[in-house]
Image (cartoon, rainbow, N blue to C red; front, side, top):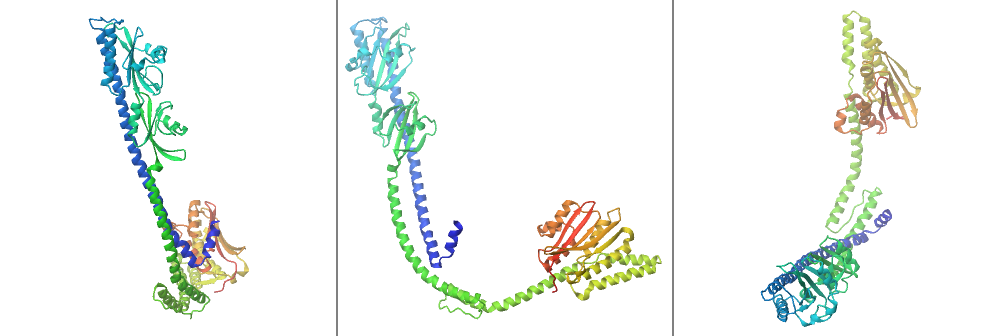
Length: 591
């Protein structure tokens, strides 16, 4: 699919390519700018809003905690006041039907309500089950007091303060339609340790809702088990909040409620096991962002219209001269180097046409010069490498002649001299760098005979080549370095008598000359390095570390002359011998 699209795009005209490429360059940055700006702006709003909501939650929770502390302080105050009245000398720590004591305790309840202004009402039931109250409305439903869970629960306490759940009831309350948060406490006689009665301090839910009415976000109160106690938003009890409420982390989160993104922040009120939850609609907070995006859309449409207009003008200014250049290039590609562009403009395209005219005039000359230089370079490189192949046995041969003369073996010395002269006569080859395989074999035989005169019983050799080797050509001195390596490195380190064989074979499109010996062989890792060097897969540093100068130069000359598909390949077994194959083209070459 991708390749098909690329092919179709390549077939379009330059005018359409400019249009299809130029418009995205203008539109995509605007889209990216709008997208990045919107995300950045929204992220900034979210971060600032979360920080503000968390601060407000802390402020509201602190005020709730202050209200709760006030109620607990009033409970302590009333406990001390009731003990002070009861232990007065007049009453001597005994509760009875004394109307004066009843009035004094009721007055203390009313006085505590005046001091602690967040308290809605206070009730007290003594051990004789008499009811004292700060407001007359608390008398309603008094029959249910003694049977209530609150009264039963306080009887089993040891005097510690107990907060009862925020709920509606028809006893110990001024207004049954409102929920009440009640603090209960058993009151002990400080002197005797006997139970005096039970204290009930009520806080109306409106005391908390008044705190929320001053805030800009919506608030809800939950129990730590997920039950909703108070809410002023419709979706506060959405099941999507359950997991967030129960999870101790995170403190704030952006969630989706009824297709709206909502920022939610929670704060724990440990004293009551409440969770204070605040939430704000992100769509409301980012209303300005919508206006900005609309402005960006209008700007984008305007830019698109301008870009289309400018693209049309640009196409006419560029594509028409390019079409003329195309026609001229087609003429030159056909071999018409006399063609010249005729451009009236002096802009970049006009200068390009002038340069192209000058270039076409030089192409013929350059082609001929390149062809001539390549041929010379090849000849020079072959000649240079040829000069690097120096017969190492020259010194040794002269040394043999000298020693034979000193020993009086003049006829043998003469034979060595004749062989040496014959070898160098053939190696000169009238200055030719490439000779027939037959001449190369004869030259190698002369070298082997010289070596046998030197080493006598060290080795023997066998030549098995086909009759058509006169038609095959090879760079001069290609076999001699390989044979020399076999004698110097193969037989010199072997205790047994060496045997060297040279034969040829034809396989597929390759004519191969193969030199084998039964000498010392080569280690496998060294064979691998040499073959890698011969196939040009080693780096320059690695090649320098491979001690095979003769093989490297012979291989290089073969590749220069015949191509990279030909050259030398080595097989060897350590202690068994070595086989070196010289691969040449099967077809005869006479140049």
